[in-house]
Image (cartoon, rainbow, N blue to C red; front, side, top):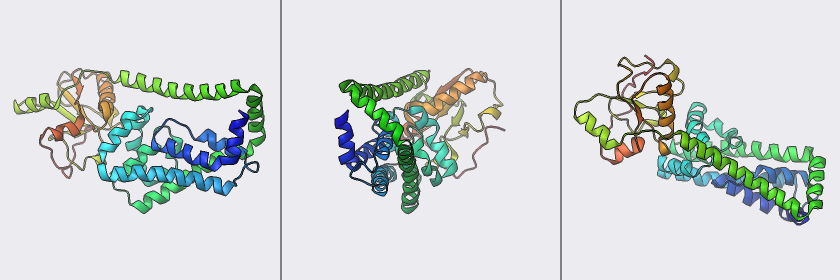
Amino acid sequence: MTYLVDLLQQYGLLIVFANVFLEQIGLPIPAYPALLLTGALLGQGQYTAPSLLFTAVFSALLADVIWYMAGRKYGRRVMAKLCKISLSPDSCVRQTESLYLRIGPPALLFCKFIPGFASISSALAGTVGTKPWTFIIFDSLGAAIWAGSAILLGSLFSSTIDELISSLAQMGRFGAMLIALALVAFVASKWWERYRFMKALRMEQITVEELGTMLKAGQSPVIIDVRPTQLQTGGRIPGAITLTADTVDAFALESNVEGEVILYCACPNEASAAKMAKLLIQKGYHRVRPLTGGIDAWVSAGYEVESADLALPDASK
């Protein structure tokens, strides 16, 4: 444990740079504790508060710009990849798009405080076409607020943190084991949350081929697009209505509740569509199924889409 403290005192900036970069790039390695510790060790190490803050902000911005550029180049495909590897898929699916699209670039000011949101919000900023300098300014300010709060807390409670470090140091290897176990417990808890979330989404689905066959046969299932309207610029399945979390409470179909209802989104594992499907089932609709692969699978299969410039039907009416 003493060896770890010596490393932080001598190489605090390098450790913070690596830790922040790895977390922002998507690995489950929390950087906030390292910022707290290095903040508490200010004056004892080979760095100052401004240099520590600059290092953290620069490292976060570097990782975020990588995701931003990936979002600009690959669009929603990079969002899908991020959500698949995320240990917080619930945050990934439910919060990222709705929060960023509702607030815009200012969401970057506090996104790093939300688990699973930082790297995904950067990719989404690129996907929706946020201007580069707007992204850099807001993301830098957000990184400064996030890192600055940790450094400030570390310096304010430096005596308490010093006592904790001293206690762990006296434990020797046992103290180091406690830290390692805490990290393992953190990752394990996130993995368990992910497992429970993915298990909750398992339900009967319909393929794009099955839906296409239904439409060609003259059947008229109710098709619901659960994406925010801002993300429908690439088109939507013909005849689809829009339903979001904000309008689901007022949702009512003119057809019988026994009719077929198909929901789709553009997220991994059809997470948003599956969650909305469960809400509709609770409202009494029995034949509700998410579309496997969502709008991306529909487009890839060569099926027709209609322009999002058309007036979107309001599902609440």
